[in-house]
Every structure is written in structure tokens, then in C-alpha cells.
Length: 68
Image (cartoon, rainbow, N blue to C red; front, side, top):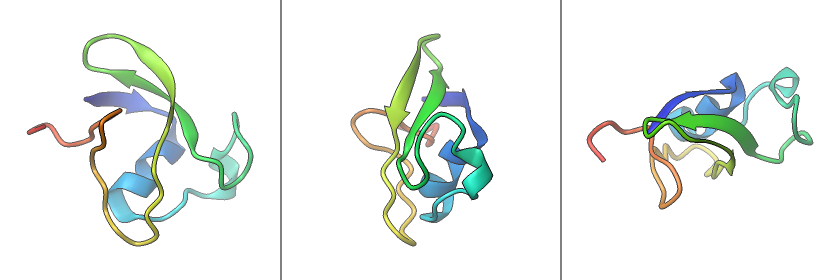
């Protein structure tokens, strides 16, 4: 489960939209890998899926949903 990450990583899973341009500090604009820390205490540069308006809170590589 994601515990903390760059601010831009929260936009795609929570509301299906890309983050503001200023949030793309470590990647190109519209490229979606983000620095994320997980509950098991590891961190990774993880690609977040952008689904254009569809909330996608979890995949095989990450979850923002505490029930998963």
C-alpha cells in the first residue's frame, strides 16, 4: 500500500486525471512514474496508470486502497 509519494502520483488514481505540470519534477510531462514509499518500508520509482477520468486505486504494482 502507498503510504507517501510525490504529490503528482495521487491525481491519476484518485480522480483519473494527470497532475499539474509543476508536479512532473522527475519525469517528462504526461509520463507517470513517481517516487513512492510503501507500507512494507520499500520505495520505488513506480509508473501509475492514467485512465482519463476513471478512478483506479490499485493495480498489481501498487494500491491506494487500504482494504486491498
